[in-house]
Length: 218
Length: 218
Image (cartoon, rainbow over all chains, first blue to last red):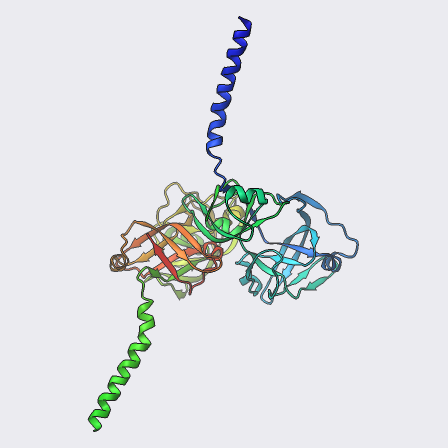
């Protein structure tokens, strides 16, 4: 009798579990990906970090970012173009081989600089900008970009979604200000976390927040 | 002989004219419309204008806008929410029956206010904001919105394009940051000038400028 009761209880619990998981399972469309929204920020080379903050300076990590090993620093700098300056631009760590300044399209007017939409590290032919830190300033020869929208993922994610590294796709967002952004680059590496990266203006224009559903369309 | 020469010249000139006009004629797709890009701005009621600038104050027009009778004023005000203030917000004239403050989605964070996407004059249930002018300040009961994307046109334009007043359409933009914005309202009145209105963030997110081609898709 007790055994029967336990069996019934087990079956009941399994049924409850299945019911609870069902909506989640149904929602598991592999083409729906999380979104990360970036404000203007920069990545420094070791040389430029030394010039701006002094040799041997250690940045203070305040927050890990979704991409493994990447983090936001407590430190900020001012960037300055021929028309104006923008203060409190966040530094992201760790240092990279080249300094890269990622601004919003609207910042171009403020700075008086024309930043092209580029993927990270694709800096050839991009304009430079002046960076002012607490210990010095740097006039970079290049590195000023507006980040091209992109989706980080692993090769396994790419296979599951049915896309390939280097491919460009579109992303669709629902809602009263929804729409479709084209030319979103797929970046698949073994150490990536699945996330679609857009900037503040792209998020605001479609009322996207960090909880929004972003659907990849091919 | 002279007559023949004149006839030949006339035929030649007509041929040149036709050739010159041809590309323009070919480009005349009625669904391609000009674009107007708005920064944050506000429209004041006479009562609020009196409170902010003093009774009998005359605004100084600095620029006619594309919509007949509408103009930008030299005067600006500060708007202030629970989290912060935004200075130099442009006033557009003439006065309206209700004060309406049109901000960018990104301004909501700065002000600490949640402005819904609404069409002009559809203000019921929208939040208020504090406006500070040179002669006084006003706490509005409502009127804070993010402008819903819309296309002004005459009923004749609407017929030519194949849309109707009140309909919502999408707009498509080409280019490296191109895409599609959904939920764009058609507003057809006899006194409208054909123009698709989007705000700075919507323009920046797709690298749209005042010369961009905007295509209506139904």
